[in-house]
Length: 265
Image (tube, rainbow, N blue to C red; front, side, top):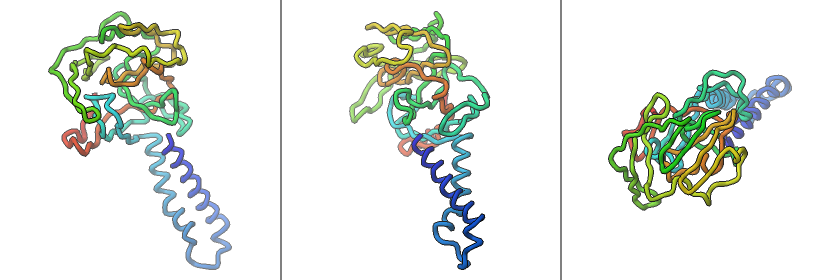
């Protein structure tokens, strides 16, 4: 969000200088060579315009800063997000102009954090508008049907220089399967971490989990690393106009070269 505002500011500044120079300044200039600030503006304007349009309407890169999506996404992954999967939106304002598709259950999406729209978050969609969602004793149920899971071998990863061992499952949300982690000794939801949020009355929390009905125009997000994720359990539903795009590829990870150019599930 902050980078997009910076890009737009630079685009407007260099474009304005280039336009003023072409319409007025160049006609009154006695020197043959452009001033440095005009020369730089003319040179950078088309580059900034191309990057701005590419990031606004096609694809945008993101870097994964935390382990909330392990094992699907690792800390340090550089990913690509398609901006047109769900609609053509106005840059910055994120207002949808042309719908191009629907958010699907199981999609990995980047969105604006509901409590601070200057921050971008990435999670998996587990609940669509109108869904009745239940997460009890680490098992997810959608509209009365328990989500299919298969236990795999345990997964070990380093978290703040400490090794964590988690149960690993293959989970099927929608048409595709993906991997999730749970730590059996942790609660399904930490009640002390649940905040007040819009439509909070549509959820009921207890020591064993929660039940929520997703309001219209909103989505419920959870991290694949279920017990190490700050997600909709704690800060609420994500409005449709907060959706930025769908993550579809890991481009690079300097510590895990084998992950480069791998498709996301």
